[in-house]
Image 1 (cartoon, rainbow, N blue to C red):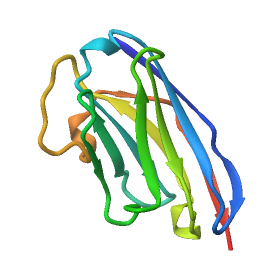
Image 2: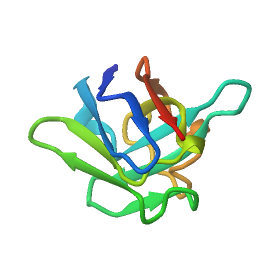
Image 3: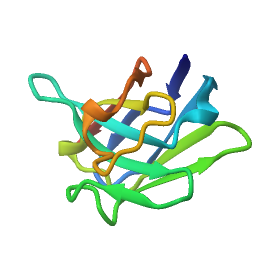
Image 4: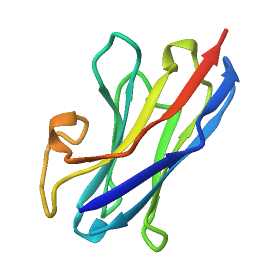
Length: 126
């Protein structure tokens, strides 16, 4: 079992920045990758960024160059640095972890994840 708790959401104006954190506990050492997702009202959940334990990353095209995912393995914490935010980034943001030792070539797909946090709201005004 893995427990995930997000924090750091809030309301900002377009062009602003936020840093989301995801604190993990439980059998997190067995998760080979972690992801950040978002879901706006009436829309499907979409992958934003993912990071493998060895450090390689993946990003949705819509956030490349603006968002950065990182990890602190010693603290079991993952981060999503979001810069130059746009109103289209408004959504509930979730971190997620996969089933123990699961491997994937598509880390931005929600179906590759088993454990989810409760989410943190990000609202960007124009």
